[in-house]
Amino acid sequence: MASHQSYGSRRLVTAMSSAGFDIGRYKVRSLMRQPALKPVWKRKFVHATDSKHDCPIAANVLNRQFNPGGPNLAYVSDISYIRTGAGWLYRATVLDLYARKVVGWAMAPSMPAELVCDALNMAIQQRRPAPGLIVHSDRGSQYASELYQDLLTRHGFVCSMMERVWQRQYANHAKAKAAITTTLSASITASVSIQFWAICRPLSTNRKWQNVNLWLCSKLLDHRMAYDFGQGVFAKCGRGFCKKSMGEKVVFYRHARGVLTREECGRVVEKGRDIGFEPAAVNVYGEQKIMEGVRNNDRVEFDDKALAMEMQKRLMEAMGDDFPTMFEGKTFVKSADHLRIYRYVPGQYFKPHRDGSFHDGTFESEITVLFYLNDPESGGETVLMPHGVGQPWAHIAIEPRMGDVLMFEHHVWHEGRPVGAGEKLVLRTDLFYTLA
Image 1 (cartoon, rainbow, N blue to C red):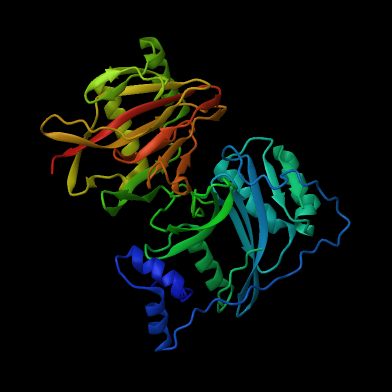
Image 2: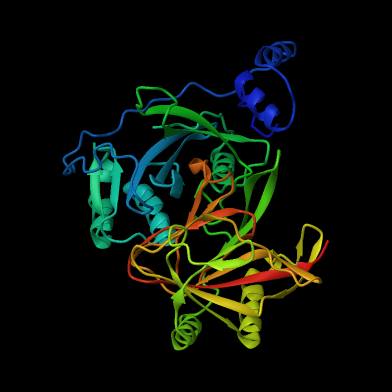
């Protein structure tokens, strides 16, 4: 198992059950004892935070509000200590509380203020948070330093103050960095599980919230950043993990940035406005119906082969080898000539749904393509739900940014969250493949 010898009997049972093996914990424990197998995780090393300094201390603005209403509203940061044969390696991490995803990190053999600044700068570059973001940390000298506080001030962030330690023994700094970067970049092999804590409502009469330990299959990879897990460094592609029928299936999705220029987006938007938007209908068994309880946005539909070819060309150029020329044994043929532009204004949404497939007897659409044509002021995230609507811990929120493109299989549940402010414009097309 690719767990770096860190699994005990409980975690082995979970991983083996996911792989289809029917075995109990006590049997696993008995088998581990025969060759004297033991997990190699070390006892956590607790290092006191250096809070004995003369730098100003910020108030606890976050105040234990660990469930913000959206992404890029509240980050938390901390420094961890990793034991290596060459001495201690220090890692600063920045976590988005909304998605419970690492959005920035930095590592160094010492802990200067630059370490926490580098981690936050990675988060800023990847997520582009707006002013007003709360950044919460301990009262350590690095976070109270003038350098770090200046960084927060420049971006208009709110400082809030009030460690999980990597427990594996590494031979040296280089090996520790390589192993940790691999994990943070969501490149873990499919047999490894990630343990994390989430708040879930228990099935009880007192209706109180409690902490529930969840296990996340690491086939759920978030390609949007090479941390996140887990929605810092952007990668073009990734895979999701989807339960389908009675089994489980790795699903396709890709998210690429900067595929279209501002001018290209503007021309598409202008075309849509010239045609004129109207209320968007829902396809119910082949019949178009207005159902504002499902979606209340507007759209415009039109056929434009030249524009479809232009969008296909830009998409293939941007994706390169990551473009799905083959999909489940089928060969890519073309993108749809029939295009749609969706418009969302504040309060408009598209509730969880799955896209239908189009076919003409020769070709069949398999993949949805969304080109984001502008930057809404807030809200409007596209949320992929590879484990279904009822598994929010696995939801992947994609922020709409001008020029970005999102591709995913039709059968993946997804939703368009309500726009908070501004306007959201999206060009929708589909990729067609040969019939199986």
